[in-house]
Amino acid sequence: MHLIHDRLSLSVMIFWAAVGLWGVFAFVRGGGLSGSIAGALAIGQALVVVQVLAGVVLVALGGRPPETTHYLYGVTGILVLPFAWSFLKERDQRQALIVYSLLALFIAGLAIRGMTTGQG
Image 1 (cartoon, helix red, strand yellow):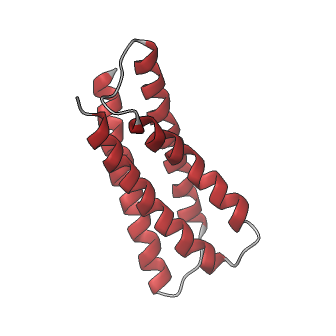
Image 2: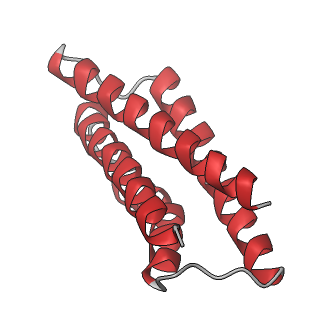
């Protein structure tokens, strides 16, 4: 299970970095939030949920990260996108695109921090 959690962290980091860069590029080109990017955000959110669930299984099996801030990164990763959606659902789609893109890069950063605090 530790190996799965570890590999999922890499997937989360790479996926969210790619979505973030894709969104920033689309924004610079004058675009708004498209169905493709919105779909990628949903897939990324599901990936984060699976990652956190794998971490919960590890905790249930007796595993603990060396730093307790590791839990904070997982919880933040799950909550940030739904919070942003509740704020942005009535906003301009171009504005939503840049916010979601920057949040995607933020979640990629959370994955990096999670990996550094989870190593033991």
